[in-house]
Image 1 (cartoon, helix red, strand yellow):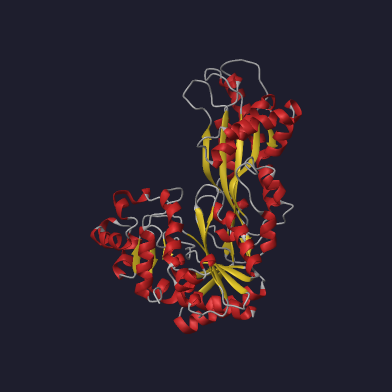
Image 2 (cartoon, rainbow, N blue to C red):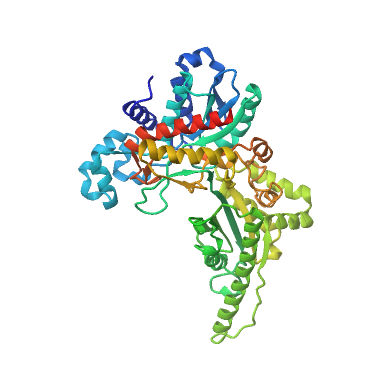
Length: 541
């Protein structure tokens, strides 16, 4: 057995971390291949090579599946992880050590006075390992490989399917591609998939939060965009036009950190308020023409709220912002007229959804012409990311309908994560209840159950709680849907796999102080995960 003791797990983790796999880099491409050859040498896969597979994404990256079958049993647990990590620019002068956990941890002792106060105690304890990916989420993958080894040695009462994917930190292209892979394997081996267990790390709810959480679902995310088209003019005649930056600023005041968009679940779970992830005008070079096209995108988290309800809230907010823009413009115009008399120009700000704007453009120019323009833009997309290309598609339609300006257009951009929950699933509920008791009795560890993992995860795509009909509001107002972005809604509905997240304990994901608590993560967590897997398989028998 290679990956069972604390030291063996630490050694494996460090080797995985040292293979830098930043999202979108060559290291991410080669990581899955490395895992393939790491597992290929085990006798089980030498005998069952078709049980270990690399599956290609359309862009050349790969996801990996490793299936260990215990015939004639059909009950199966899926272990899900991602192997990509975020960039390391935040490490500054320590960037060269970001993927060398032992060396980085040692060097931080030499920089003790320069590290944040709340990190010093952890560093001094000697129980923490620092580095990019040690927490999010190569520790989870490490322990999954340990469970796979146990399965190969016949220690589990059923089948285990390890699934590890790229791109979780960006657009979840890996997981979106994995849905069909899971279905194919399910059909090929006639699997009865009892649950999918992810091992994203515990996420703190507040500073110095030491609770050990498990999650029976994962929070959802919507990226809502607002495109504002004003009226161009020279800066010397500002009241002859309408500045789109002014429009977007007024709209932002209605949404940024607005508690009314928060969602509450039971007594202790609440979504963070919306916050802006991108805001800019579309002028490509400096001039004295006012910016007349601007865009703003907001991150919105959801739990139980339907997309239809959220869409309606955003639509109503855009309309209120439009009235506020008109009112503020009118008041400032009147104030300036005291100094320079001129005729007022009433500004009526219209509000459209992307679908409404598309229909209006088709009405004006015909479906063939509008389709030709969209196809042309798509074929000449170049290196534009999903967010910028979504904006470009909206801006082009707005230019066709320029007589409707000033206008606000509500649209959506990838990535989209449906909220998912296994609340009330009998198998998950029983497993969680027993796990909480087991952790306390065996390890003196108190587990706090949460219904939604707060950090976003690929679990979102395994069980569709949202009404598929309401998702049409999303897809019809997402310029990229079917044009480079697609979500396998029907396949997700057919899979409908119960989900659970049991993971290692760490702190400061996506920060240069990212660190993993070794005793809990490698002495306790493997046993908790093993207990979870065995409970799911035994209860399913």
